[in-house]
Length: 269
Ligand code: DGL
Image (cartoon, rainbow, N blue to C red; front, top):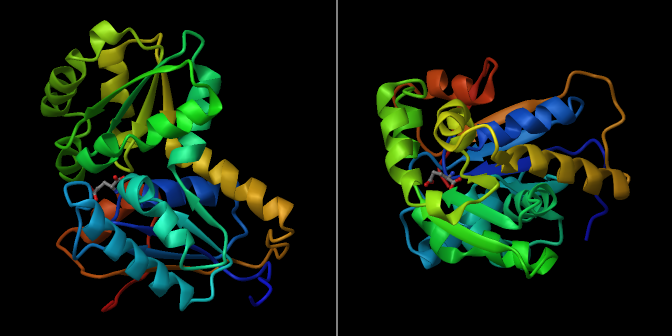
């Protein structure tokens, strides 16, 4: 293995633009780091696809990042992290960080009553990946999952504060009510943008865990331990690549990222 260098970029991939919510947290915590982002916009969503297809796509996404000589790979997509993490790790000797373990660990710490609800795509919820990670930390915790697939198009439509978002959240989350959880994992890249609506439905007493924030913390810890934090104060290089440039991409991307995206490059995988 080539010894990684602190000035190499961090590579991040997602099924589309949702992973920019994770990028936003990485930029907030690690402003000196250069980044290479790849969003597989031509093949999004992953969350409705089979495990074998998600694995195949995720390996291709990883190979693309590796061509950019990244020092660490972040799998920002919850669906890919849930079903393809081992497959990705087997293809590289670079450190690979998924969003499941950091989110699960934060939820275990937050849940005083040991009852955690998980919401995500169909792929994430049916994989039970969050549940497995939670039980590695504490096997006595009760877990309930609920797939909320309509949240993804609602966010991409920009309807975060719309009545439709509220009614959809109410409908999806109603069945979880009797489970009496005190902590909920927002297990999908898009859901942090629905935090206000979800908060209105679940009430003030539930702790909402944003896996993106927790993942950024873990990335910082790993880079610190490996002496790979970029010490330079020069303006970092952030490059955004996608496999398709859909309509309104820049507008929606900037909404996820919370800042301007200067240039987006379309590539063929
Ligand atoms: N990025 C995906 C996730 O976090 C959501 C969109 C998709 O289904 O691909 O699971």
